[in-house]
Length: 218
Image 1 (cartoon, rainbow, N blue to C red):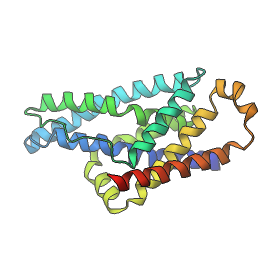
Image 2: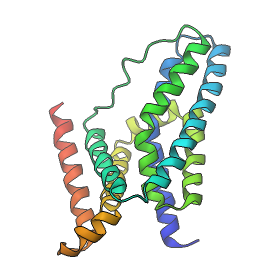
Image 3: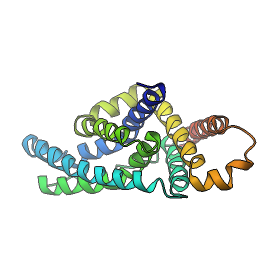
Image 4: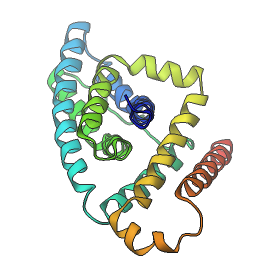
């Protein structure tokens, strides 16, 4: 397996861990008022529904990333998300306790669909349009969603450095998505005086420093 592929897989895995955390926590919160049997059923069917939607969303996103300016806009969105991650802006506190497994399933599917947009964009960008890597990224996200709520939350609490690593990779993916957009390559890239890797490195450092400063203020 080529080094670039291994690096892309590592990026996808870290992105999945960091960005699937809130999704997994939402699943746990939506089901916390159910009996153990109903909770298992809601998690199973809710997650399966969420996965089907995520697969469709990823296929559409991967296809759209080839359209001029879509990658650039996606990169800007991911950069914004990476800035929010370290500031603790992801809010799952208002997820209501579901009174039935059917209600919990609907909550899980809807919440995961809304919250998966960042994950889909990031995995699509890190995969560089390689459908095999996209499929692997989806395969990694499935067990993280179904079994990883407590594990991910505990890992991020115990090892805060993971959040910084994930945020750095997300910012790196975002700036590369922007710089690799067909429109940017044609209209902007010829006028850049420093290499793309240097630009990416500067952006990552700025994002991490800004995130650290912002989290200290909250």
